Length: 452
Image (spheres, rainbow, N blue to C red):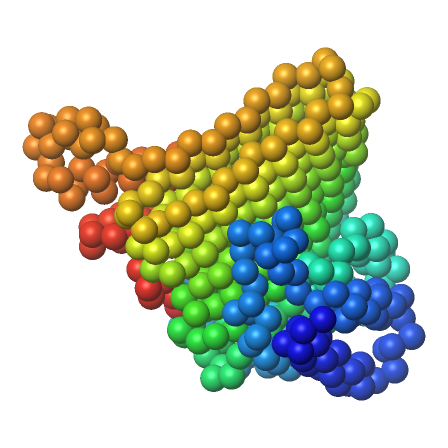
């Protein structure tokens, strides 16, 4: 082990020891057992390097050599309602739960009365009120690979969101979880943990947003677990517009019960180095999973999207479409895996990755994968990388548009294929306005993507 890696592991081990001292007797709980196990795994291996197959296109050295201070204080860091203008869904949401530097802010949140059988609380609250219930879900998906940054999420787990819908309950408006990074002057790390449980035949839409208030250096290290019961319908939309100096590592895991339907729309617009892992496993027959993603990057941004769909049960369907728009010297990575287990007959799986390069220096590494162990299946996958079609640009110019407007229109159409799949109207409208504004300025993204 080189000195740099050892120093990084010692840094977080020391911060974890400080964290333990502040728990006031909470070190004997089952939760802290998970924390300690995860910290031990990270201490033994540290951050992955490019020698790891799953990380060979993404060098975490800039993140690893920065000494981030875990943000554990429970205050609003001076954030006001005015700072959140433009980031909230307003009347379009059934509830808006705001977190500042990973901590729930009751002052900034809007939690009106919800229908019986639906609970939306901070994770810290839920752990105090019904620890056994929450631990039953936290224990079902424990990060087992200590080389993953998500191990540090579990090690420093202390707050986040807990959303529970009992069997047969439904919401016609989304629940919005808004994570705000404050303007702290020193590098800090947040470790939000989100648990979403949709019972049998429940229906819900969750919007998970990440925004920043300044161009500062910090690390958002988030983990989301979604449990969809038999016949449940869940839409999960993620919007990440963080500081152009920020790091973002996210892990989202879906567990689908029999006959459940899950749709994920992941939009990445901000951050200097971004790694998102989205995984889904079918735990019952007749399930349907849709994973959509859109990454827009420019300058020196790196956006790495990894997806895993595990067809562990028969007669399930999955659809996947991930797109990237890369400008400047931006780099993109896509690695999509589909597993079809031996007993998963009648599987129908389709995976597509498409990338639009707007400059000669932008690059993408794409690797769609299928591993099929059943014989009665219908599976396809493919990837396409290219530039704007000159013939299409010429056609639009012949209809009266200048070249810049023609290119902007085609670029917007490429992104719009993902945006229109989002069913939350305020979020869809916000993204549409964002793209049109940026394109009218002659760019698809900027160095100042921070939207207060």
